[in-house]
Image 1 (cartoon, helix red, strand yellow):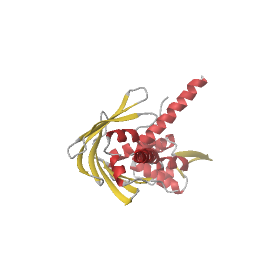
Image 2: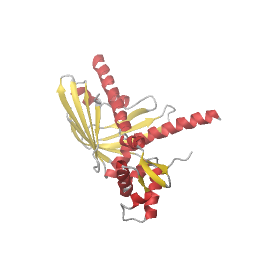
Image 3: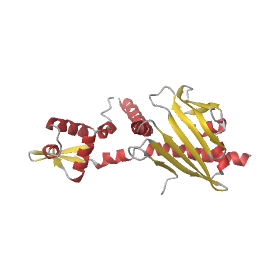
Length: 160
Length: 107
């Protein structure tokens, strides 16, 4: 089966391209990226809640979100600036993880109407170097590894 | 618990990638592998040790000779490193889709 969400990351390049088609009108897909409440909802999951604390949807406007664990501890903050903002078509923004060794990245989001209830998002992320891009790509992989590792430790400690 | 050397660090080195390509076609002894490189034999041995430690290579004794094999299972694991990243975005976008479908109905 073909995946709905596709990742393109060619070797030696510093770009990641993510594409996805939605059963949604392009207006709603766009709104999910510009409405602070909606954005926070789809960026949250059972292990962490994300809240948009600033979202100025205009060129030169800033954005910032905070992610907290179920105990309420702040685990992740990201921020950036909007450079281009075309309703239902395009968002250009910078993305920076606060208090992390990673440099800021540049993101281009392109929204496309495919049919009345069908739309497509193409997202380009550009990193300072190909090495930095690869490190970021591996983050969820590394987290998965360390989670598996933690579970293993948990099981082992119970055996004692 | 102490984590072993990172496999991604292991394949970041061009000589080690060349070794993996060599061994991919056939099992080889350390001597046969080293003959393909200008670098000193102890340097090649060090690379082999790192690759073995990361389980990218496995050793097998055949008589007096030690042969190095490629471990395809571990290699596949590396090839799939993008998959968790894709899954993370897929989960986010699935959620976006269902939230916005609900939102549309409520409007």
